[in-house]
Amino acid sequence: MSWTDERVEMLKKMWGEGQSASQIAKELGGVTRNAVIGKVHRLGLSNRATASATAKPEPKAKAAPKAEAKPKPAPKAAEPAAKTDAEPAAPKPLPARKQIIPAGQPLPPQPSANEISPEALAKVSEIEKKAKKLSLMELTERTCKWPVGDPATEDFWFCGLPVQQGKPYCEAHVGVAFQPMSSRRDRRR
Image (tube, rainbow, N blue to C red; front, top):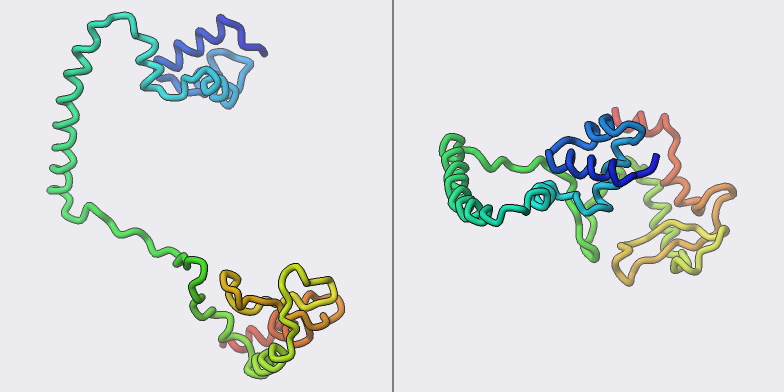
């Protein structure tokens, strides 16, 4: 299907009348809703207010009604005030969302840390004293990729000790990262 001048004019007319892209596509036939939307954007008709204004620029006397349109927003501004009087709790609080922590700020304690066995944590703290403290660019497939610290600070590093075969971490960090399912279930009870 190609956009002939006739079809483009029909599209402009229907868009200016306020018909939806689906309705226009159905009327034109052989074109999808998305094709209509794309053509509208390429023609610069995406804003319906300007499309209807450009479709009717002939009478210059329309400037007077525009002046009349300016007093209309004042009553509209009064209408929402009346609605807020009718509804005392108009501003509703937003639902609770996850807190976004800016870079460089310490992270709050993670709940998963409570699930890790004390033996594994003790082993990790011992291993991290022996860690090579590598940067991201120094990591290889044979070095432990366990991150330590806040990535937004200069004190951030990776463990760097030799990895356990088939895993991305050293033996101590594998014990923390990959826990058997049954032991996790037992701790929750």
